Amino acid sequence: MHTQLLSTEEFLLIKFLTDRYYNMAKIKITKRKSSIGSTARQKATLTALGLGKINSSAEHEETDQIKGMIRKVNHLISVEKIK
Picture 1 (cartoon, helix red, strand yellow):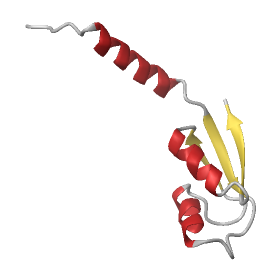
Picture 2 (tube, rainbow, N blue to C red; picture 1 turned 135 degrees about the vertical axis):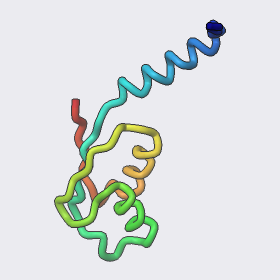
Picture 3 (spheres, rainbow, N blue to C red; picture 1 turned 90 degrees about the horizontal axis):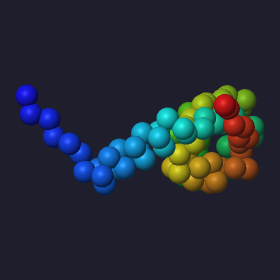
Picture 4 (cartoon, rainbow, N blue to C red; picture 1 turned 180 degrees about the horizontal axis):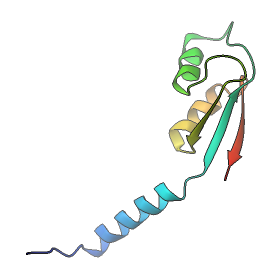
């Protein structure tokens, strides 16, 4: 059986990606205000975050994409860190 050794760059990239995945913080997002009067994009963002009714909550990994979504609707939600 032939095994191929990884180059140093490949090894470091794999290590970085796995460490980043396993060390991500979780956040709990809760919808606090109504989306009536919000733009269609903001409503779509709330739906994508998994928030429907007021006081509904969703847990997500704290990725750059989720942080950007939070910034767009931060006036309608509350965020708390878990872990």
